[in-house]
Image (cartoon, rainbow, N blue to C red; front, side):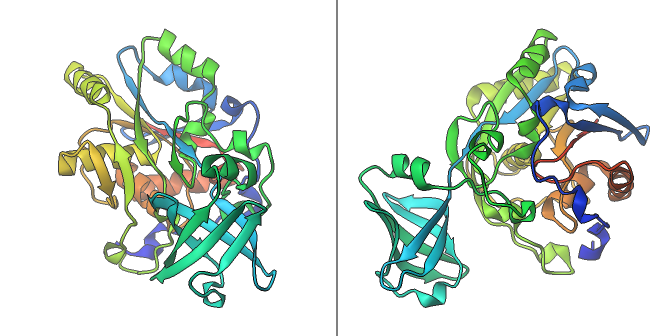
Length: 336
């Protein structure tokens, strides 16, 4: 498979800068893999496609305000620190643009009692130390929600709520599991009332999910590791659902990667760098709720493995024609 096989034309105006409100009023494209059919619905109609005894698996990760904007202590130059993940107490992996201007022990002042100390470079990332009386409190106060760059606008106060799923619990992501953004509390209640089971896994979304594929031979691409965890009760529900012949429905590519990582490793917790592209045999996931993904992205490759590349690209071209809204704040797709 070549990288160019996963390209498509997307007019820039179809990239969503804000989500529709309420969340469940976005558009929903339903792809039937067996019939090769495409339907156009509204997201809240998803209940019509769920059966009693089915299992909806959601990612309960929570996005942290990972972007810190400060000034270099010595020169006053503006510097942005993008936190990736904690390594140990107060020590984080991060990204810093123009990192060559920094020397070890340089300080980036975010607020009066909150600064970032640059420690060292490590290949494409850096190691920093956060100095604060209460890091969690200061991140909430001074940190910015890390909106993807293609949204092309500064984050706003309301993004702290809009870029978070209503079921987010476990802090650790630097990007939202966006397929889950379409669910409201009311819609989840309707799903339960229909007799559909709901369970949760955790995968902390890292920048690796969005790292561009640069090799034309996609098999040479290497994913960044991301932490995942699957509770025992979730595994028990998955097993029960599979045995009953009902469907395990993944809400988002992060859930797919978590569940299929478990199949490959047998581990319910750990780090995964699984890269799913055609052909791939899915062992757990029967149906998939997802957003519309970037051209040439690993996420587009994953959905192409799930529904066949030709069918997915046909659906994407139809979405462009019908003026669907794309990417994180955009519309949704349900592959059945």
